[in-house]
Length: 121
Image (tube, rainbow, N blue to C red; front, side, top):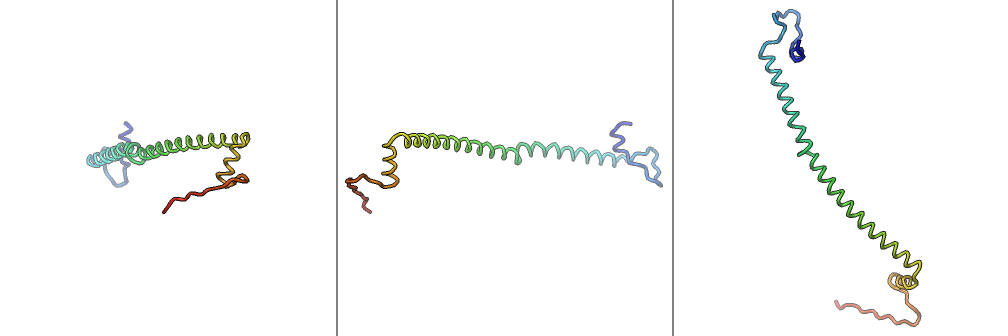
């Protein structure tokens, strides 16, 4: 017996007289149409979920996040290189130490006169 016929065949019930042992023709067609409709829905839903649903949108979001991460990585690498150069300058160059002391700490040498120029409101 063919496998589809075994699936579509209904088991016999006691007290039911069916000569061929199969359900009526309309029931077989209804079952077949139900299987076909379920298969069509499943085959239509799968590409929707993969391409148009959250899959494509999620892929785009991840691509944008990746590009932002790469840009942030470049910025941080440049900052790290600038800080390395500043550390080397502070270790080896007395003028760099003096510049930092003047700019950040407001220190001056003895005998220097400071003029503050403020903008008019």
